[in-house]
Image 1 (cartoon, one colour):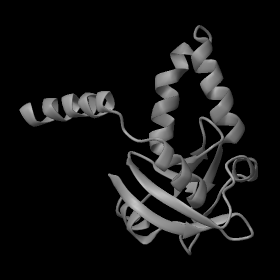
Image 2 (tube, one colour):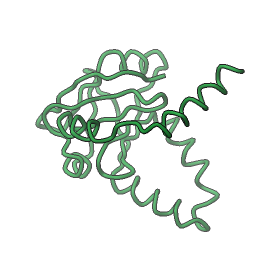
Image 3 (tube, one colour):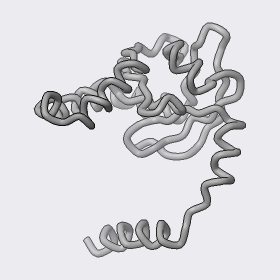
Image 4 (cartoon, one colour):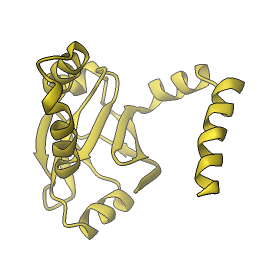
Length: 151
């Protein structure tokens, strides 16, 4: 499971060195192939290729009948690329996604349980300050966590 926040920088070549704690998790599972994409062009999501292939398998039966699935695939294909982790633990973020999400300079790489999320550090800090968790949202999360503790 990916968790926590690790600062990072992107190289001029568009390569991102994966933070050591996340790289260690990938190494432990012998993962070298990843899929980098975005659902909104604002943040990159890094999935193991195996996890992304499971998403595709779940969506495949719905591609011709569900417009939302088509839109999702359009977006994730447009921004997406399969990448390989190099010997130094770096990956290349797709240029079109780097430009759209302003993935340059200082970044934040966050664990989101099943994937990694990469965002522009200053932009994310501004967005986070404006997106406080409402009382209703806290209640919703509390209900989910209460179900987990009952099991």
